[in-house]
Amino acid sequence: MGKSKKSKARGGGDDLLDSSDADSVGSSSTALSDLSISYATEHVNSQEFVLDKYIDALYEKRGSTREAALGKLVDAFESFMLHGLVENKYATLLSQFNNSVKKGSTKEGCLASRAIGLLAITLGAGSSSHEIMEESHPQLSRVLQAWSDASKMISALDCLAVITFVGATDLAETELSLKAMWDVIHPKSGSNVGIVRKPKPPVLAAALSAWTFLLTTIGSWRINTDSWKEPIAFLSTLLEAEDRAVRMAAGEALAVCFELNLLDVNSCEDADINTGGTGGSKNRLFLDMQALKAKISGLATNLSAEAGGKGADKKNLTDQRELFQQILEFVKYGECPEESVKIAGKRDVLRVSSWCELIQLNFLKRYLGRGFMKHVQDNGLIQDIFDIKTDTTQTLSSTDKKIFRSEEEKGRALKLNKDRRLAQARKNAAMLIE
Image (tube, rainbow, N blue to C red; front, side, top):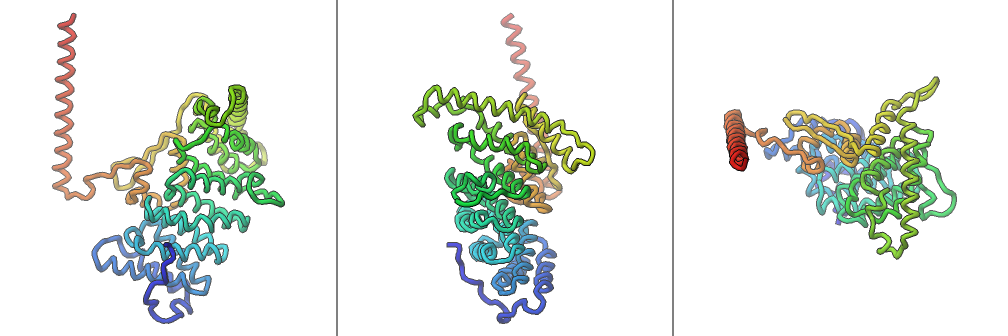
């Protein structure tokens, strides 16, 4: 599966977009973006025609033509305009996206990686997204193992995180992606032999961000604490990195580790039984983890109060202080971060109140970019992730809305009256007992 043949009717020979690649694809983009999403037959047919033109352009030999088509498809995916149109075409799209990752230029590979992730988000959880993950994982892993262009690696990391987040169905699949990301974060732990490579700060920060985003999904799947000792110890050393983005990404990763109790030996009391360990080994692990907690708390304290200093890079300094202040409050007092996003056009508010939720929100906001709010409003996957309830009155007429809200108010009044009667009954019963 996932290797469909080229779509039919290329419409005009081998030179579909030969003479003016960008102009032709650009005019197609205008046609697509100008059409409001409607399930009226004529509009759907028009959008499908434009989508087919983009798919045809992905088969062209000229790289600039493919890049132009990928760029317009990414724009359409971001705006959630292709929902309902790609279910029967995703295998064809996926095959060409993966070809672009494998054989295309750096720009084409970055666009294709992004398109794969957006395709998975558009389709939502299910067999199609699982197939996307299975088909794309090997190629994305090869990009990371090749240590190619930094921008291509960052795109591959983001894509791998998204397709695993949406498509993985068990711990083994998630661990496979976590391992590929960790081999970028801490190369000497990888299977490759030879010279140990050191990732550039932007790549390291992206790998940490992708790894943390995926870590939020492991929940009850997590394995014993001893397995996390080395990764957590290495993350703590990154709090002293020169690059601020790396320090912040490491801090977020450690915050999730704290929230998932990966530093808590007591959360895995059966570890000794399962691994044949002894009480002494558990005590040593406990002491090691306590020492790590103390080190992390100390570093977080320093970073939460870091002064800019003369000539210092003040970019994101305020964000760093606020982040590590939140981490300290969580570690010391158990206070979780909270954030809310007003959903335009609805009475609903997207609220998060844990580190895992906050990491997911920030990653998806960054990944979806300007299309984030559109996906929040219309994409069932995003609504399920953040438990957003849709406004049932949104599609009703003005008269029906009045009736619906009148019934809501009547229901609330009846409930209040019932609560008052019950309260009075309890009061009377108490007086009789006295």
